[in-house]
Figure (tube, rainbow over the protein chains, first blue to last red):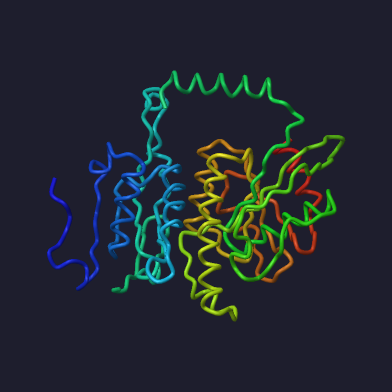
Length: 130
Length: 214
């Protein structure tokens, strides 16, 4: 699968990476977190089709904190839609070991996202260049 | 999680509760966003039942930059005694910018040092949540919008770990306090209003602590 890089780089604008659930499936928690934070630290807005599990979200906060430094990275802004109850995995799915974590999630660099607003059906981000 | 894994976990939970030593205090983490009044609450509980405080309170965000534990706090309610360790944690956030501290009349070096400590403290708080607490008191400033991503994520993390959680709508003494808004944000949980600073409604808070964590 080709990497989502641009020859021009994000310097001339803001790059948005839309990452499919398929691309994330099979990755370990730390691989997912690394992929998100590497993108965000490069100034990209990362949109995850399937979001993260609560445990991964907790680790994302922990790793983000460990990488904040005063003259560079000041952290992330993150918003996601709440999991729809109608999409909850049913009893059969749970018995088969299937977990539903699908929730569109937007992550970006805190110093570039001027506002990130969410209601039940819309996430709206105002992003500035570096 | 598959059927067998769920069955195995259920059996281990039941056996753990059957053989648990009730005299062991439960570790109750006080969590919430920065400036919600977590340390004020921790101090109120500790002073009411032990006479000592847990740590200094401040209007400057991230005053608490290390998780602090007050051990063996014995709360008595309706003939029932609950023995807990209170863990006061730094306010959880996804960003820390040292320039915010400069607004509180700090020199740059001090602001940078504080922001470093704050990030370490938040990471530590997340670690405690995953590994080391038996229940959570989630404190929210009832004058602020509770529908934030950090609140939603943290409540989700707490729920995913099956930890008992008590949601407190703090700062009811302030104009603009809106308890209903907090209740609406997390309808799946009971919300208890209080002013930790003024000590308002602490009786109900202690009743609920005994009920949830006893």
